[in-house]
Amino acid sequence: VRLNQILINLLSNAIKFTPDGGDIQIMLHEEPSPKGERLIRVHLRVKDNGMGMSTEFQEKLFESFTREDNSRIEKSEGAGLGMTITKYIVDAMEGSIEVKSERDKGTEVHIILDLEKAEKREKLNLTDWDILVADENTVVCKNTAASLKSMGANPDVAFDSLSAVKLLESRSQDHTDYRAVLLDWKLGGTESIQTIQRLRNSCNAPIIWTCDGDWSGMEAAARAAGVDGFMDKPLFCSTLYSVLLQFAQYSPSKPQETESLDSGFEGKHILLAEDNELNWEIANGILSDMGLETEWAENGQLCVEKFCQSTHGWYDMILMDLRMPVMTGYDAAQAIRALDRDDATEIPIVAMSADAFADDIKKCLDCGMNAHLSKPIDVPQLIDILEQYIKGKGDV
Image (tube, rainbow, N blue to C red):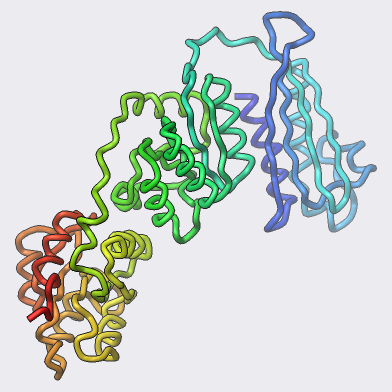
């Protein structure tokens, strides 16, 4: 409880006095205590690059309600009592607290405490596990690698998607695949799904998405792209161990041969109406692997406009999401069918939606669509639809 109170006080001050775009770090390390075998010495540092404090104010920092008599410090009125309480707690725990600060350069608070050792827990053992850690945040990446090393694993690190792909390809060529890949969910930015697909093509190991936010809304899309599991940050040793252990007996499924996907679809054009960028990336990646050329419409109205602007017969199929802003997929399909051009009645329009009840499918057909494709995309079902409506089109 008291350690929480210390951290809340220190971090509250750091946040309060660090402007937008600033940097706050919290660091923790331990070492043997000079006070005896039953104790461990813990060093806790909170460092920021905010407004800092004058030398005169630092001398009075731990006095209750003391602050400098100027407008700069009046804004930090709450800091005095918080630091006084922190100092009181640290003193009661027979520890020490040191503050280093300089105006406009920031503040670092260093606390040293000698704490009783916890009971020895079962050793977390990942001996000889070769693991790839891919994360653009170098601090997180290196700390995760250090945690894995402490459990006997052999981690490699990659700070960008290109480096990760190269490491995986090298391992694949040497027939020494990783036991697991820990992939930050933001690696690759807006092309994160394509990054997963590239990694999956070079990797027979489980790919685990490491997330520092709510990933539930992206789970289906991520799994469709090749993610096997998820892990919440921060990545403590216990978290790493418990999740990785679930994949100890991992057996990857044999990847589908590319040749079986490409035949007959090369050069065909798909107009894909989808408002969710993540879903677009997944669908585009799958279709591109089959040799299809895709064009993106972010809503139903844009889909209708792109079709109107295209030359006769340019598009071979429209894949239509149903729930979109501006104009729904239902309305867009009806609008296209009502156009005064021959290909408007001939082009296959396939609904693409998680709504897969009989009533939903009937509504799609009533609006002029030819078929329904469920989300997340079922690749065999997609191939069946493409073969039915596209393959051999025009070969008469």
